[in-house]
Image (cartoon, rainbow, N blue to C red):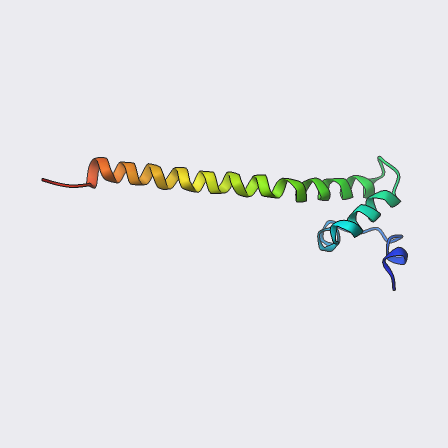
Length: 81
């Protein structure tokens, strides 16, 4: 069974996540703009594009919390003379 015959099937969100970018683009192109499957495909594509930014956000948050903990330790629990 080729993808062209599968494209006629309506895919769930889980199934859309399994598609490669090329197959997702074909799936989106098959449906008319505004159709539920077209919208789901676009949302999945946007989710994939926003992932790197989301990861950077979590990394920045982690570094900020680590720096805050280190500065609190340095002020209150650091070197005692």
